[in-house]
Image (cartoon, rainbow, N blue to C red):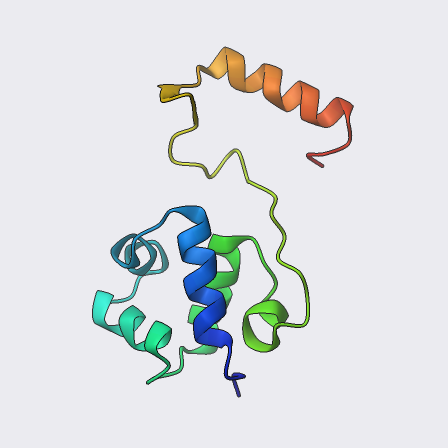
Length: 109
């Protein structure tokens, strides 16, 4: 089912987002060892787990499974744990300003 680069794609996405394997496993509701198997390529995730990974990384399931699309690098500001700039948390007021700027430029639809 999965192409040989599936494990590489999920590892690259995890690293790009700055997530640990533990954080990913917790976020998608699986055990840490199960996630390790996926990145090593020794086991394949269920369809449900692939959907959860796609949602977590904001990519399509086609991208994860086949590598046929470019990942969607949009950040869901509603789902972000903590947004910060230069090491300081962004306030709700600053977040609204950022959203307004993004919307004005058609970036965050």
